[in-house]
Figure (tube, rainbow, N blue to C red):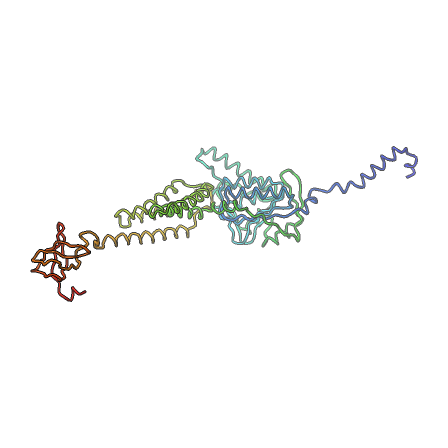
Length: 452
């Protein structure tokens, strides 16, 4: 202070400014982790098949979390299958996100399949619930088209390197990446946690335990910045799909897409069978468009799709041809085989039409086809009830004496008739036995029968 008294006013001002800056410096030197500590925690849940529509939904959730400077985004995976070409892009988005992303395989009993392998590797923090698993028993990546062995080897090397790099950067086990990419591997939560180092960071019972266990963990983002998670005593906010996203996620389910296709075929067929001024055809067109939106999001085997259309044609044709059910049987066999092979299992592990849906459709079509065939055969076997042939067996009243030829009245008209046995007087009843060139052949009947 004595030195400052002997300094010039300008020097005093500089010293005071420096001193004040040093006092306020800690207030401005808050690390990014502390700045984001109070950011929201978001939560999304992935169910069903992961397709391009799922990727669009998750990308929007990541953008929302980044715009809100969220402290974390939890992606809960309980999917039934995934399209590999879309899953790889989603994993890259997760790895490059500017907010910490936690991938959590839950609830118990979930088999996350290929989605678990990719997303757990890309996540900043990987967690699983008890009694869950990830991975598939087939190669984790396959080229989309037929390629040479050299190109396929290069592709598998890229996939292996990417999965291994993500796990190594997060301090998780990378040794399984080579085998998973080329042959396939499946881990449950206990096996994944027992690896050295573990393949996952946490095994927790539910979301509340997950938030408690995440407290204080440090995450390094793709840009090199570090974030400290502050999750203790907090709850996550769901980011739900909007209406359009929800519709796309529903129709992209393989079972839903198959059922929509079947219902579209039934509606269009019903329009041709019983015209309704376009009502049923309009409904069928809407169902067909919805089905195609779902099918185009999945790797469809086009031969199987053509087989489904062919199967519907065979079942429909059986109602108009005398095959006695043979076409229906062939059509049902074609339908079942086509439905089972409708999607490429190599490009979309776990993506298939549910067995119950195939069985239900086959049984319903079989029942309706059997009913239609029964009615057709019943009509064919019934005696003719219209025209001249329909008069055979009818009772007729004699209007002009049959000796043996005369006139009878039957079915509202007078007919020339010839009596087979003797004569018949006016007012008597006779039974028609034959019709030949607009002339009836009749025979007399007893009085009790005539009274009936």
